[in-house]
Length: 101
Image 1 (spheres, rainbow, N blue to C red):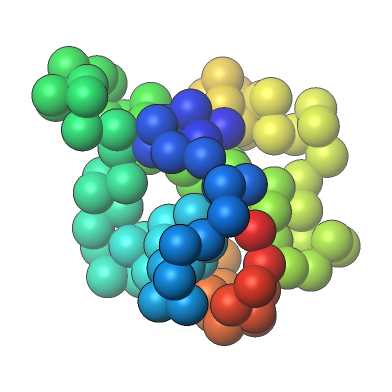
Image 2 (image 1 turned 180 degrees about the vertical axis):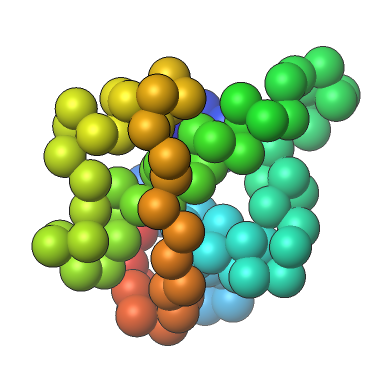
């Protein structure tokens, strides 16, 4: 889901040690309130920002470092459809480690 929204791959080898994983980048943007910065620039603003934010938040929940805090597949689907409230959480990008991708 995060790859679809961002237009970037999370599995490509990193070219240098300063690159961060897609998930860590999204977590950092969420913490700074700039979550829409992760949206694929090729869309040139032609997207529903509410739906995009919903998809990013669900993707972040599904990749939470603690498996017990991840939603079930049916819960994730309900969140994406707007039928269930998305649980807000605070996660430290450092929890994933810099080699996590």
